[in-house]
Image 1: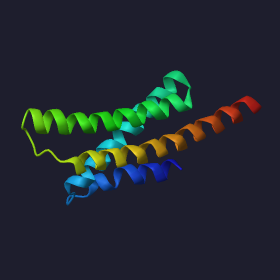
Image 2: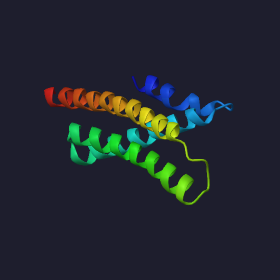
Image 3: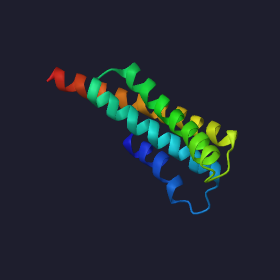
Image 4: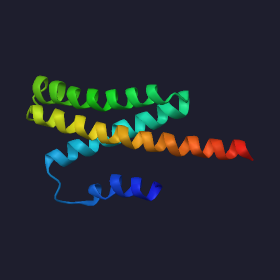
Length: 113
């Protein structure tokens, strides 16, 4: 399962012909996956880690578009970019559920011994 997660995260990063949509999806994915996994390790609460991970990915995408692109005029404001980041965050959140399941199974196995 870890190999599958590795492939899902890092293979798109190796592509040199990424369009803007792909970059936003990967950013949302990595942010929500990282924050969700760290939150789960710190609190051991699955729902909280999923909510915090997803929310952080979406929030970063919205803030990037509203603050960086619109207010500071450093890029082009686009609502589609926000949606792509949110979609990536959704995928990252699903990947956190896999991470949580793997950790629960490991803990149950350790308790059985």
